[in-house]
Image (cartoon, rainbow, N blue to C red; front, side, top):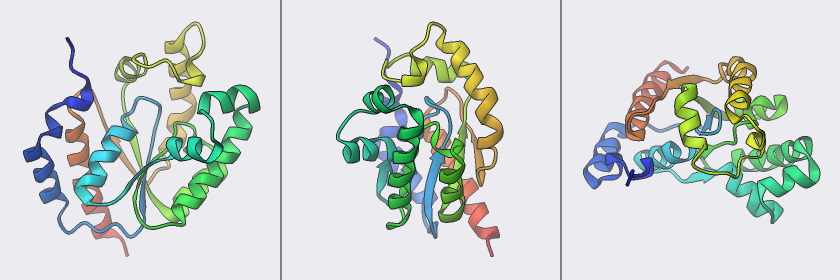
Length: 201
């Protein structure tokens, strides 16, 4: 049986302790918002990053579902993407007005201009950039992705990459992620974040 990535070696207590050691002294002045395509690892990496920084973790999609009282798939089906983006923007604005935390956002959140402006103003945005094969391996494990309900999900994902990657590139930081353990990405985020904050005025 193939072990899920969420059970990789990075979850061991000693690995968690090592990440917390690496995060010592890093005090983000604003919420850290993770952006990127579906399957980039925003939720898993976000949880581990929050643990390392000893900050709360929030998944924006979960917050949207809680606020709407219905699934994202249902919102897409009944109200359309533009209405979903409006609600998403409201939820993210509320979250960013609260205490500092690590926020995992949906794949289209940063693409919406007004939501992107909110994140650029109130958060430190980090793009988790992953290659197509890695993204496809991850997203095909679950069937709840509204934008992949088509005959050729890989073609859809490639189109999304072509359209969205230039916009994701406007994030404050870019972290290249691959098929390795998620904690490797968390470690890279921590070192990159430390350097970024050291250069901040």
